[in-house]
Amino acid sequence: MKPRLHNIDAIPEGKTVGDILPAFANVKNMVHVGEPNSDCASCRKPFTVVRKPRKAILLYPYDTQIPCAFSYRVCGACLAIYQRGGLHRDSFLAAVEAYHNGDSLEAMQ
Image 1 (cartoon, one colour):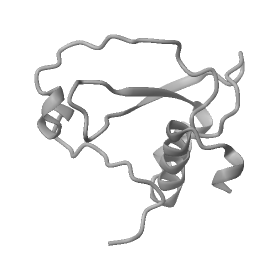
Image 2 (cartoon, rainbow, N blue to C red):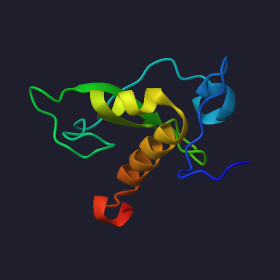
Image 3 (cartoon, rainbow, N blue to C red):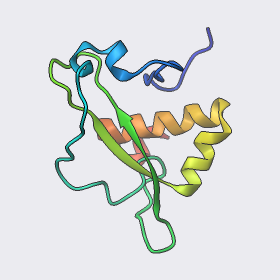
């Protein structure tokens, strides 16, 4: 198995988060609490009229007892990086994980 730059696992094709994490088994709706991030969770550039949020990535903690997920918006350029796959996707996910953990961009480099 090749080494990864992040600790984020994808939900397998044909499965739901409820199939993998028991806390989410009977969840039918989502309630958003708090403000969405004002900068891209991957490149950290602020959203503007030109750089708009294009997608959100949801992170579900493995060890949760309550159904709580984290949603982070990303810009179109970073979404394109994710869609390329391979090491590009790994670097995108590593950046989002660092954002989630509160690490600065300088700490990542």
